[in-house]
Image (cartoon, rainbow, N blue to C red):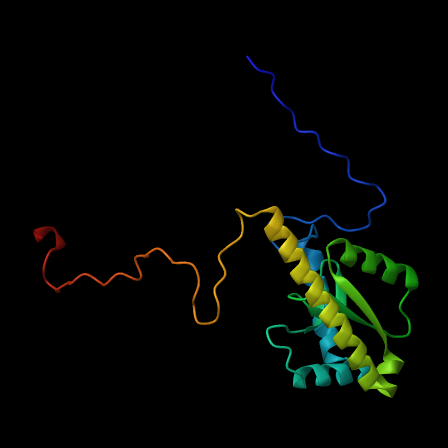
Length: 197
């Protein structure tokens, strides 16, 4: 009889401040009560946004980002970020007065640990020269999109059997098998029993 192999797991590092991620539910290892409180706080922040946040939100609402979009005061894990783009993996934080640096650093580390790029923008810069801020954010968005594409390419190269066939906008791609939806429906007449043939 052969010896059984055992799975050796490395211990989690003690210096990591990032919350653990679940593979089910709402994603993060946070209680439902805490998540509900965070969502209530984000809702309140949306109602009473700062002038800098309103100015940037107005510019974002008029911009055409294609398939990418931003959510205002989004709850990401145990943090509330000013703007979040899930597709880009980008979080924008407006630096206002009164934010404790230790909490901000811990929040940034936890977001970066799960692959979210964090960009800080000063509220004074938004109010004084919003065009320069938008130019900087455009560069950050392009870099975030390029990072996502590169990560996807590396994943597809490392896992060739997991990749799905690519289709263009017209539906052209590898041949598909016929599904039951593609087949013509059977002739069914009301009042006739299907067992009669």
